Length: 307
Image (cartoon, rainbow, N blue to C red; front, side):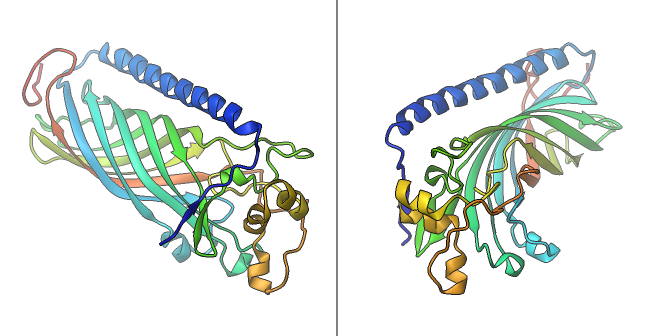
């Protein structure tokens, strides 16, 4: 059985970092909830009919795009991992709706033959809480004649992730190791945050099975503001600096070329490890099914009704 290993070698930093991270996470969630309330109030003021509330589940997959993404399309498809979710949605009229969703999934990748000199890999579960606005065109009314409609969506999401790798049979948490020298003297960056804001957007098509149930298929990218979903972005840190300050484990997982060459680890400090010009992305595609409960704003119970 794999043993999870988490190294925290910065003795004065963890408490301060933990407090600031907790505050940042709280602010991000509060901002997301405020955004959801404002959007809901704005959309609820729109003139409309067939308002109804939905709750549903989502099943599908997620895939990552970044520094460790393989070039071959078939290899990219192999990286798709399960992603499941729950959501609620308030439909204000045939065109506009607001959705609050939570997704739980996984992303991972590994260097292929074209990057065997680097030999890096990562895997991370993630949680995503999103507030979204949907627009149906030409329109959607499960209680009327518009039972099929394409739609687009966009919004704001809070995401938590925590990249790991497997080294000598053990699961290693990468962020606390500062594999590119984060947090060390002589290096510019601090440890990257595991809690980020993203911009989800995309589209799909929905179909009303009857006045109570709707199924849909959707796909969309997530624009992130980090290049560290995979723990890879800039240059190699000095092997010596990492070994002395974080331990040999940190130095070995930061540059795993020695596993390919069979030689002793070398110091490639300052050499390119990733491409910091482009942030990482991830994509989520899902099939959803939802049940229409009641009108959240006008207190009409039962199935969708035409006003």
